[in-house]
Figure (cartoon, rainbow, N blue to C red):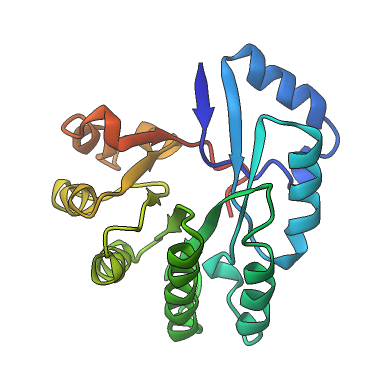
Amino acid sequence: MFIDTHAHIYSKEFVDDFEEMLMRASEAGVSDIFMPNIDSKSIDSMLEIASKHSNCHAMIGLHPCHVKEDYKNELDIVEKYLHDDKIVGIGEIGIDLYWDKTFYHEQEDAFRRQIFMAKSSGLPFVIHSRDSLDITIDIVSEMQDGSLKGIFHCFNGSKTQAQKIIDIGFMMGIGGVITYKNAGVDIVVADIPLECLVLETDAPVC
């Protein structure tokens, strides 16, 4: 059996064949699916799925690509859901410098605030780190007090970066990027202990 640790199955792309999708996943050996949140707009649909399907598990968080001028209001909403019994983690959170660097400082602040939420709630968290892997590793390393745990989503870094992640007690999420010929992730992953890796689909990609 497999556990998919990262799938946005509450997205509109799945509306037309949602139940069929879950059936196909089950037939393929997927026993559980973990759903990272995007922003306040995706919470209701995500929690509805978690309520109806015991094998679909919800997380709460503000995706870095959705950190804008109103990010503090969004974080207030995240905090309200921290102790909902359907919430099993925080995410996805982090820093994305690929699409837009306009709100870099706000992204970093939102990332740190949500790590503090993880500390206070005891929940693990999922890190989005597109074009910011060194930055996010440094922030988590700085804030790690032994209580933090989680996953660096969609890992595509070097052996050195992988070792740093292992050293701070985090895992690496491996998805479709491992099949990209020029990514080199397959070579790096070959040297990473299996207990430090988790399976992700990240569908649809944000």
